[in-house]
Image (cartoon, rainbow, N blue to C red):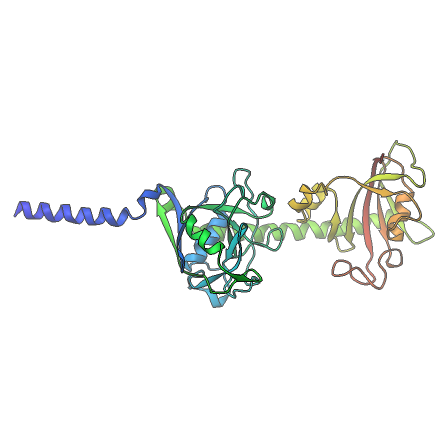
Length: 368
């Protein structure tokens, strides 16, 4: 009898061990098994370096995200979705329930760039987006190194099994980069190996992130309101010129007065009268007003820009008049009425018609 009980315990433990040992060969960590019509792709996720991005992926895959649109709640988001964009020697992209490239889960979240995670080889898992902080559900897997995507798309994992499947998808026949025969993600399963992986709570991470974002938005709106009040007060103290331009000197420079026809190096920040920043090459101002763009940084867009110091410069009249009043080292704030700005036409979706504008201008040097 004792031998039978002992044998039963051994068999039970062996079965339990087999169950807990599934994918044990992958080692500790968080993984996702993407089961496609071409075969399985297993990716290792970087939850320590990109926690929000990984939490987003997991909560969508498991259908646990409380932040998705009503139509997706309680559903395993990725199951049944196609790879809608495939480009050989570039990448394979999926994660859009509409299959058009324009779908989303109903929210957007931040980028999580990490210098140790780059598009350095085939098999890199990264977020697709339409610009800074526009991540949603779409992702791609690289088919070769794509370093030009660094700092633009969040890398959050890499393929550890199934690179041959990535290859087989990347070379399918396409029309306008869309596979002629649908490549479907039949199922996306999350694999948790080890204590740290099991402790990672995707919903908690996402909840904490969005709570923090709400607090940031409230603080930002408060800051913007206070800044608008500051602009209004400063406008009453500014010197009005015959044209209607008002000028307030923030800092008196000690440099030379540029000669007409020279180029000067200029920092600027442009605001609407309600305190909304619409453009700036001051990096700190762009960051403060949530307009910072890493792509612009890479293109040296946060440096003083050479401008013509001339009445013939192709600048709006109020900006030009303010600039021509300055010497090197000056920093001024100009209040530009509509007739010296963009007038009744406005400027696209950025500047409304008949908008009062405010510009901070600083000449740092005369350009060579």
